[in-house]
Image (cartoon, rainbow, N blue to C red; front, side, top):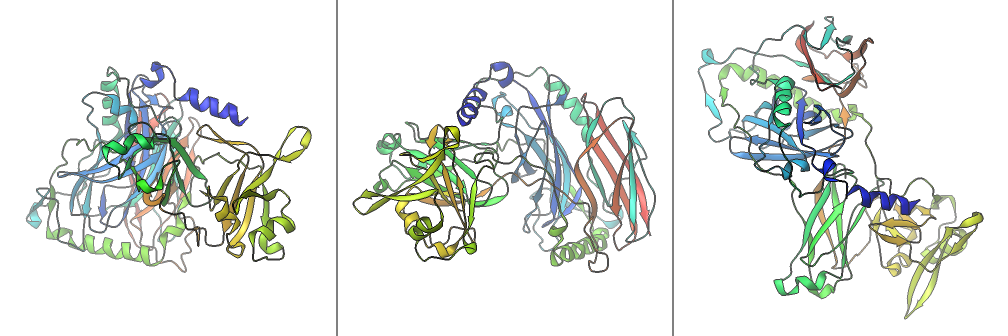
Length: 561
């Protein structure tokens, strides 16, 4: 079965040009248009096949850039499944005040000559703790000259939205009803409206025009589409040009500590380049990078390349700044600090995301606290784990073997090497495992099947899960480097469903956000939003695409008293 999976992956990377030539355009909707530095920008991503105007099944990751008039300020990744994805971007606390464009694209766009990204949305960011501003991006105006806040329109296109006014702390039902004959996928946001004017945005309707205009574009042969997840590219650094060819016999590994089994491998080519085909690595993590089959005296290491294009969209409009905004910004600043103080991140709702299926679920687990604790790993193997044994490899070294399930339900030890992991990170030195302190280990998971990693066969897998989960007391040596890596954002909703009004001072600015709402024609969808602990006017915004590519949007206003 593992061989079939490997063969399928190889075939997937060699799909015909008809699939590789898909022209894609990406759009990101956000929970609101005005933010403070330090807040989260909640995002919902749409990736569309320009030839059909429908959601594209090709790319598995969208790259998102926050661009000011000065250039790219921040980048992020959003994992896609069948053209839809979600996540958030945390604005740095030191981000200068100004307007920023949000642009998104996929690796498919790299193959388009002269590609220029479309600005999905312009957002205004105010830094209330710093006077720094985007150079040339802010204009101080007289209070009387400040733009009036944008007005919320009733109704919309392709969908009707109705919501009654409510009292502080109450549950407000929001009714959504499609007006078309095909289903739609939308994002839904409810946020506080204030006196600060939102930047001009044409939204999903303008994006539909961009998609139509892109239908005649051509894609050249080049970058491989990211069907299963992000393709990480890098190179071997720290070598002089005359030494590059000496690493071509080696192999590189990257892995992220944890329980998601983000383990990937790549051959090193004659130029020192490496390519890791991942299944999308989520969240910010420490990436363990190891080189194998290379002389450690070369003292080289892996450097991963940034995937962002850095190609500017049209510059955002200048942000008008006046004293009349002070009271609303002070209120927003207090609300942001309250959310941080009371750990609002515990209120996020985790949405489904595609994990890494490298190991699967067929395993044998030993929780070491259920047994007599022994001070030596060899005693653990001998006393109560019959599936593992350590054999003498000569010269004072040891090889670890595990029983592999065979035909007729019979398991046998084999001569092949298993893949040994500590907290999900490969450890190729079996002596290190043999000498590891078992009192640091909480659980040993054994996967007694043959596994393949980038074409290399392993006679089973053993994962030593420690109490701390961060590979304590492991000395990998000079062949290993640890890099900080920002993977795809975890898809989350922020509905406030877990708020206990008696214990939580609810002054959230965004009081409801669901990035992945599926609507069916002829069937009303009712969402429940918990009103905050303060009164005001709130905007209900729905934005998305019908399955035939038709834009869907609506805005309405509600009062909370």
